[in-house]
Amino acid sequence: MAKKKQRYSGIGGQAVLEGIMMKNKEQYAVAVRKPNGEIEVEVEHYYGIVHGSKILNIPFVRGIFQFVDSLILGMRSLSFSASFYEDEEAKETAADRVFNKVFKDKAEKVFNGLVMLFSLALAIGIFMVLPYYIISLFEGYIRSASFMAVLEGVLRILIFVGYVLAISLMKDIRRVYMYHGAEHKCINCIEKGAPLTVKEVMRCSKQHKRCGTSFLLFVMLVSVILFFFIRVDNPVYRVLIRIALIPVIAGISYEIIRLAGKSNNILVRIISAPGMWLQGLTTKEPDESMVEVAIAAVEAVFDWKAYLYETFGYEVDDSWLEDTGTKS
Image (cartoon, rainbow, N blue to C red; front, side, top):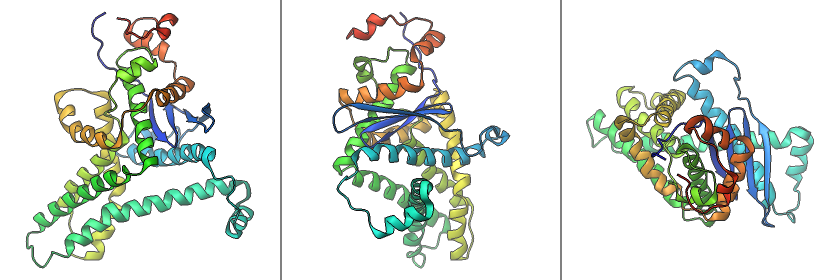
């Protein structure tokens, strides 16, 4: 069989605690390796905050809502995976009882929402506001506003890369990065037209152009460009503009990552290169047990056999799934 060209499948995912979330259209599955070694799979639907709206067809605007949806779905998936590793001996505090009494059956959703908002505010503070304040300390020594803007952008990227490196030293995060690699390998396996077996998945790359890591790096790079051209004199307004432009930055970055995921020309490969490099830090080589979890998540929401037949024109023989080699 001739070498297959990688094709867009439409599926995406996220690594969670000891597991993986895979999403296909409005359906998503979270597969988790439980402490007893079994794989638990939950399948749910998520339609998005503006499901069915024509706004999702508007370039640059749709990315804002897609970003919010990814945060909500990511928090749900993390909450589900973490439920298998909670400390059962932990005692309920008075604050817990009050919180549960006030919000009742919505307590978990409210808590997850508050955690998401806090995390988002913290990220904005660290990656958007902090670099500005640090560079502003040198305002009296550097006269060029353009040079100051470039320095701020470089510092923002360095802080982001430093953060990624720092958390990678944590044991639990390293395992998440390994599951992250398993997620990418599964998608790459499908999109290159290979049967979704542990052997085939392990052969695939742990990096993927549609990765959220690449999206975040695009956010940093786009912010450098926008903040270079959009300037005000008032320090308070400078901070407010940086916060106000975040939806615009997210919208632009989404269109770039969307283009990268569907194209493979030389321009796309060039703009994707920094993100692919950064994924070398946020993905690690998984073991076979992690790949098994990733496959379980994929198969719960995506008929990869039908995809291979429709896209690459061949049917998968079930005997292949027991074979250790590639059928070509």
